[in-house]
Image 1 (cartoon, helix red, strand yellow):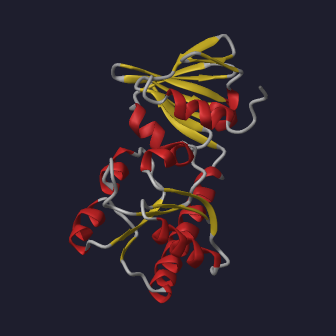
Image 2: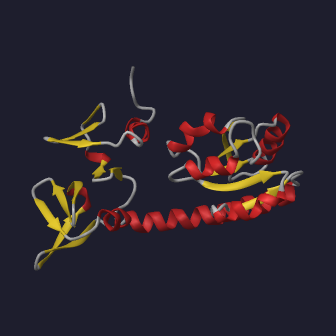
Image 3: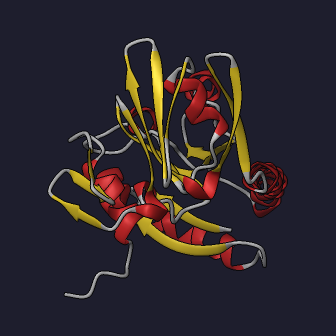
Length: 235
C-alpha cells in the first residue's frame, strides 16, 4: 500500500516513516508538512493510505480531509484526543494519539490492510462486469462498457453515446455513475460522464471523443488532466 504522512512536525514525520519502513505491506510514497503540498498526489490517486495530523499551521487536517472528493483510507495521528468524534464522522479508519507506540501503529496498519483488500476485491468484482442493461422506452438494451463513450444528462433522462448508436433512458446520472466502474468512467461535469479510455485529446476544458467535445467542469479540470495524462506527458 502506498502511504503518505502529513504532519508539520519533522520528528513526528520521521517517527512514522520509521514505523512504515518496518512493515512489509506498506510503502512510503511521500511525506509533507503542509496539506496543500500533498494535494496533487492525493488527487491523482497515487496514495492508498494517509497518516494525517490535525493541528497544523494554515489548515486543520480534518478541514483538509473534507475538501477531498475521494480521500484515501485515512488514519489520524494527533496529540489531541478531543477531535476523535469529528474524525470518525469523516469515516477515518483509525485515530492514533501521540506519542504513538509501534504496537498501536501496527494494529492500525493491519486494519487498513484488511480494508484495502476488501475494497480491491469489491472493485475487481465491479470492473469484471463487461456490460450493463438499461431500459429504453419498452425495450431493455444491453450496453457493452467497452463501447460506451460518454453519457449526457438532459433534464429527466440520460443519453448514452456508444460507438455505434445513441440510447435514451430514464436513468439519473447519479445512479449511472454508481453502476459504472471508475476508472475508466468519470463524472467530468454535472451533465457529463465520460469514458477516459476513449478520449483522443484534451483541449482546454474540452475532451475530444470522436467527433464529440465533452466539457469538463473547472473544479475538476486539473484532476481529470492528471488522471488522463498522469506521468505520461512528454514535454
